[in-house]
Each structure stands twice: as C-alpha cells, then as structure tokens.
Amino acid sequence: MAFGYQVLGFGSGASAGEATAPEVAWLGARGVFCGGTITDNEPINVIEYITIASTGNATDFGDVITGRGGGGACSNGSRLVYGGGGTKYAGTKALNVIEYLTIGSLGNTSDFGDLTVTRRQVAAAASNATIGMWLGGHDGAGSTQNTVDKVNIASTGNATDHGDLSMTKGNGSATSNGTRAVYAGGDG
Image (cartoon, rainbow, N blue to C red):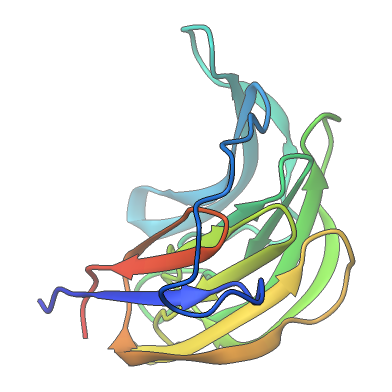
C-alpha cells in the first residue's frame, strides 16, 4: 500500500503560499450518511442522519436513487452531493452517478448529474461552501485512477475535470480548509 498526500486548490484565486485559512464556519447540526454495502457486499440505498450534538442512533432520512457502496459525499452545509460508487465489490459495476439532497429536509435524493469518469471506492471527497470534489478511485476493473472532478454544489449538472492527482490512487481520504483540499493515503 502506498501512502502520501496531494494538495489541490478549489480555484479561489490564491496561489500556493498565498492561501490563508478561512474563518471556521458552523455548517449545521446534522450529519448525513448515504448508501453503503451489507453482507456479501450487496449495496443498500438507505440514507440516515444524526444530530451531531446529541448521542443516539441514526434515524431514517430517505433513500438514494441508486443503491451503492464506496461513493463519496460533499456538502456546502445545506446541500449534500453523493457521487460515484459501485453496485457490488466483486465484479463491481463502477458508476458515474451524482445525486443530491437538501440536508434540512428529509427525503430521497434527486439526480444531480454525472462524474467525468465511472469510479467505485471513491471515498475521497472534499468541499468548501461552493465546490465539491471527488479524487481518485477505482474503475470497474479495479484499476486506480488519478482524475479529480469538481462541481458547483448549488447548481445541478455534470462534473468537470479539475486536474489529476500526482499518481493513481484509490481508497484514500481527503479533507479541506475551504481553500485547499488535501488527499492522503490510499492504494496505488
């Protein structure tokens, strides 16, 4: 397993070395979980939520249109976008589907658009108040990818190619400070 990190900009206009951390913004009290897999890697279409400030079990939120595991989710605080994933791990059909929901309203997802490539195990996703990104992942045959896609979270539509990771990676993690996204870990 290869480890490392990749830093990506959100297009804020700041160049490397000039970026300043934005003020920390409280983005809400609700955590939302989409899809996943169960025994024998069968995909599920369940959406659940929690109230972050309290303890307790997750509560049903609604359903994703396409049941799948390994997708990545981004949010601007009011809208969640969920993209990629696969219908099964063994012999997975990789998907390019992006769906969205309004975090404050219980219900099912709606179609948002498509990623530029099909990918499963795209767990690496990052966002700020405007842009959501999906980084790397595996195609349906299990090969890792280096594609970075981005969307404007407030507007439905297809993702655009934002560039490439420095190497092909899947199963990594990503985080953001609102100006930069950092991709770490994964397999290549």
